Image 1 (cartoon, rainbow, N blue to C red):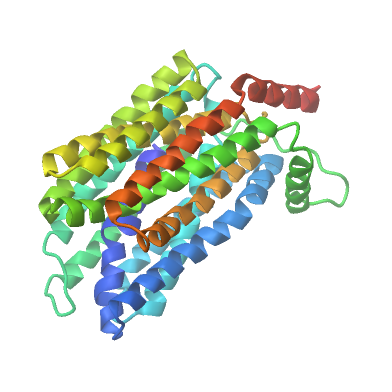
Image 2 (cartoon, rainbow, N blue to C red):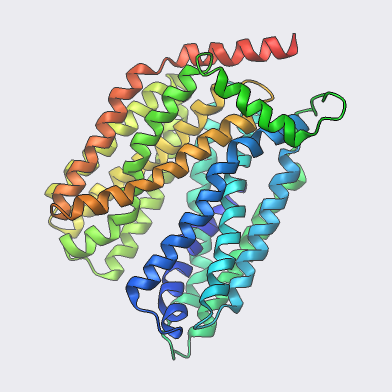
Length: 417
């Protein structure tokens, strides 16, 4: 249910509504050029994600030691809801206020995303890890669609600097905050944290213990080598995912000639197929293995990149988008489940913190794509993006899932024995 709830934020605030509103009326009202507006939006993303990137493993380790995942998740939940609600009051020209509120809300959202993932090993057995992770991702995509439908009456009129619909458009941010608030409540009403606080030496603090735990893990990379091997593979192919997500609409508009209505339909196809991919591959993952599920999803990503290169019509691009959607849902849910199986009991917060760190690092993908675009056209650049998925498939041969599980079990036995 928390996946269902927080998807409203990433769909409406990060992707659809607030992003275009900030780079439109907010920056235009301050007399900024489009290039300056895009730079500021990118800066806001970089600052918020950068903060989460450097704090995620330590914050996760602190929640492990203090058994406070649920309490900290509640803090991030309320922080994101309040920050999102504050966006209602961001009018034209309020660049500083609008950027600051976005940074704060995005820090809370991203931190909460890592923390809620750390509950996976507590609420699923090794045999059900895939389907539970897949169900969460699947519900998340439906959460994004549901919130978009609720906000549609407020955003349908569009906006402009002197548009009478401007105030109505801003109310959509309040709808997102309310949706997140209400849909997130079941998590805090029914989810029980099973972890117990770990004993500390006299005079020590959980903050210090968190830093020491992360340092200890980094010193014992050989013990957790399968985890870190996979994280680097995950980083590689996630760069490709970020590229596709960032430039799919632009490709459809420039290379295929799709209208805004057709692009919105493409978004719907992506969400529905991603939901299907998350849940169906979650079931396959439990039946076979996470390794095979990830390999299959990367093969689908490669098919999508090759298909996009040859696409010339909207219908064909819908088909490519459907394949990409299935691949997106499958690869994301499978990665989360694999990290869960590699996490020793009592250390999931820390290990999912590393997962969050590498996921944020993958945000460099669109920058690499932009550099590539300076040298070639978009079709060639999309085809070249497929190489990242090929590298991911090759890299997965260095990941031994059984050994990673054994390392997690051995650490758990050593700490509880």
